[in-house]
Image (cartoon, rainbow, N blue to C red; front, side):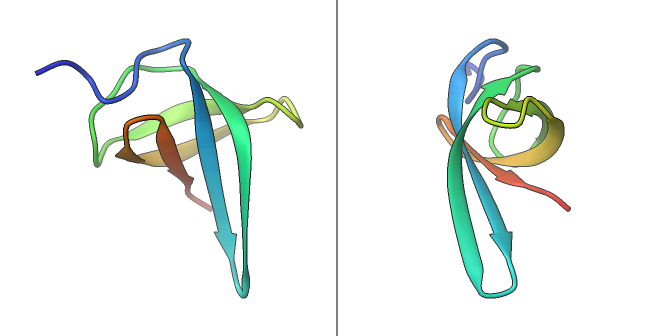
Length: 63
């Protein structure tokens, strides 16, 4: 089975907090499958974050 997200792919980062949700662009720093936690870079802030792969090209950031 091919990975859900490949390292170097531009992806959507979903950031949820109490009462709001932000969607921004990110860059996958690792390859992974749905349900796995990978390292990603927020392309706006350039910060490295961790998130769970929820679908092809979509990662839910973990706080």
